[in-house]
Image (tube, rainbow, N blue to C red; front, side):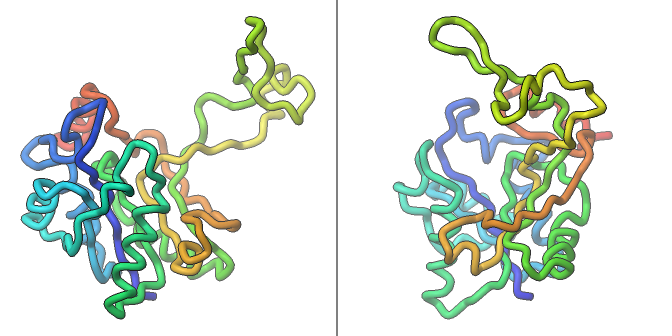
Length: 229
């Protein structure tokens, strides 16, 4: 199985300006995902997909390939992950480079547990019908307890196909995961079919203590505590 990693790092960020190259300790944020991918012997190529020449130069200095600048139309707030993944696939296949598995590592998850890429590949090898794998953790807040506000000021249970789901005993609540963003793996065929998930998504379960998502400035402080512990 030939594997490529795509690390999306566009230049625009509203919550934290230049978030992907803000320093987290001694290194810019994007460097942690680059080094994570490079540490895996099963990854043939580590690519940063960016629309920023500044991010491109920094990424190259940490060992990533940046063979193109992502088109602006795939680097907006409204752009889907599928857009830059398909762009990368089309680019490499135009050069005759065909990869069986595309690994998506988001720079905003800089302190991943070790071995996630290996585990994702193993899940694919053990489940031949898999279209994708993504990291998940058990949801702390169950969607059966969520509510939607109506225009008249009342609220209705978020889950509408289960009668009074919000009143069920905790023991009867189904196990629910939420996606963590630490790693996603998608087959070439799934991308060609127009998706980065497909119809057979397998979970790679991690613990809450193993995940940090950088979205606000205070998240940098949390990540630093993990890095320096």
